[in-house]
Amino acid sequence: MAYDLFIGDKSFSSWSLRGWLMFEKFAIPYNEHMIGLYSGTMEADIEPLFPARLVPAMRTPDGIVVGDTLAMAETLAERHPEAGLWPVDPAARAFARWMVAEMHSGYGALRGGCPMQLISVFHGFEVSEAVAADLKRIETMWALARERHGADGPWLFGEYSLADVFFAPVAARITGYGLPVSDAAATYVAAHIADPAFKAWRAAGLAKTYDPMPYDLGLETAAWPA
Image 1 (cartoon, one colour):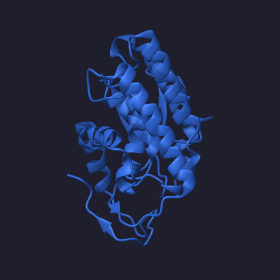
Image 2 (cartoon, helix red, strand yellow):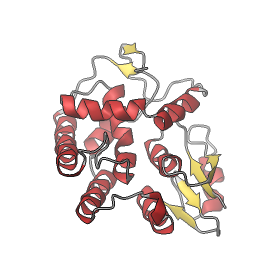
Image 3 (cartoon, helix red, strand yellow):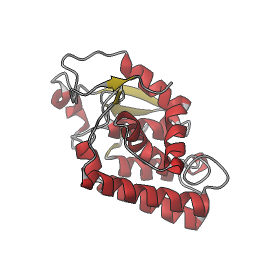
Image 4 (cartoon, helix red, strand yellow):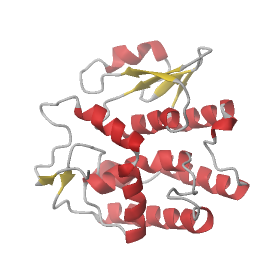
C-alpha cells in the first residue's frame, strides 16, 4: 500500500523537496498531493491533516498523519529498514543523524538569505558574513563525512542516504545564488543537480508559472545548469 505525501510548490519549497526525495530515492510507494503555498488555499488544503500545519506531511497506509521532515524520515526508516535510508555502519549512521539534525535546526542565515528557487541562477548576489559562516560550517561537515565514510561513492556517506536528502536544497541554493564553495563541495553539489530525481522534481516545478515571481531579486540571471 502507498503513503499519501503532501507537498508545496516544487520550484520553491525546500522542505517539500526533502519529503519527496525520501520516497522517490528509496522506492517507497506514495501518492502525491499538492498544497497551495502561493494560491491562498494552504490552510484549507492542509486542514484534513491536523495538527500538521506545514509541508511536507504524510499519511501512512494505515492512516497515521506525520508532519515535519525529521519525524517523517525516522518513521520511514523505522518502517522500511530494507530501504537503507540511513548508512549501515554505526559510526556513519551516527554522524549522518547529527548532520541531518543540524541541517533541520540550523543554518538560518543561509535559509533566510537564500530561499530555495529552482528557476535560474542569480549573478551578483552579495554573500553576507552570516551566510558565509553557514557555508563554511556546511563544507566542514561535508568534508568530514566524505573523508570518514564517503570514499566509495559520490554522496556524503558513499551511498545515497537521508543526509543527502536533507542537503539537496543546500545544493540548490549554492547553485541558484552562485555561492562560493570549494572544488570538493562544488563536485558534491553537481552530483545533486545532475541526479535524475532532482532533475525530475525541477522539471515538474517549471511546468507552473508565477506572476509575480517569488524571490525575484532584480539581479541578472543565467540558465540553470543542464
